[in-house]
Length: 240
Image (cartoon, rainbow, N blue to C red):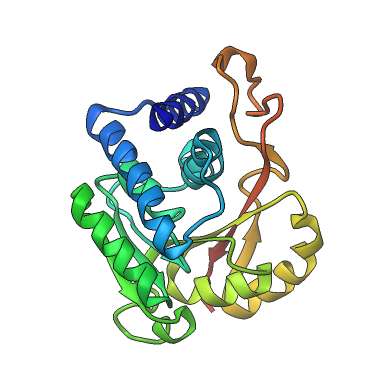
């Protein structure tokens, strides 16, 4: 089956980071893949529908912070502009002891996410409908999270403006970026301090998402042949 190919490639990639799925996680990823494809026919959630691309560009990309120990147990994480649920849903599957809040401004996507969480039994996820820049000023959300994540959200200055207000002092905001991230570094470095942040590059630019079948092919830098080039930047929240 096509979904089996997705799971196989996902597990191969996770093995490169010494991460393994348990049976519950494996079944949840299987069900998530089917729901994503089914709902995509109605909502056009993603243009990425090939089995191996789903594994690499949606799932492995989403959970990359786990390979660098940026998300720990009992943390509270907010996914700003989650869209089809990336990176929030894969992270929630992998981290059942972490609480996740997924925010999106599109009602139809929120409905999809709520349905997925219900069907997958993800009790550690709350889905919120609204604009991040407005929700961040509400008392219940402002500085209420250890980690904020944003993927495919916009330029780095916009990412910091929409994530750092959610983050507690001492927490981090993680921006998922592609290989052209260097073009945004200057504006990102200028914007972060205005929001009590300090740009700290936890994950090298670029690093490679693992796509190899044999983990032994990967040197310690996590580079792999024919892998997707990515970068993830983290801004540390300081007290003003």
